[in-house]
Amino acid sequence: MSAAHNTRQVADTELPGGGFSVPFGNGEQCHNGSGYRLTWHPARGRIKIAFFRVATDDRVALLQHIRTITISQRQASDCQLDDVVSLDDVPTELLALMKAAGYTPAEEVSAE
Image (cartoon, rainbow, N blue to C red):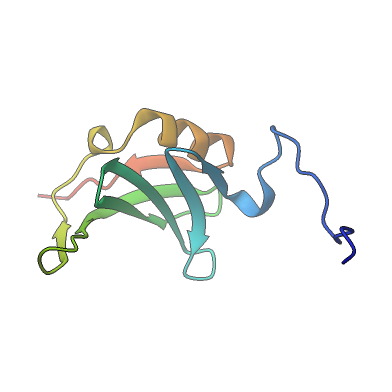
């Protein structure tokens, strides 16, 4: 078999397509660019996904909710949706990488 592949190395500073993947999580555009998603694993068998709505042309991304998925082989898997969230609920390292990808994470302010 040939070991040649049609791939290219991506530099550490390069974030193709506004996304990234690091050992503790990843970020990517979703919904045809109108959204952004951060995923991380806070504990074994648990996945958290923060969903942002890209609200402006200059890529301000408003945090909408965080989904927590618990996976278990011994019992049924579970998914919880928390829509009362703040940026403090998202790992600062992932927010920093999101900013480096050209997005500005923000919280939505309700007009009450």
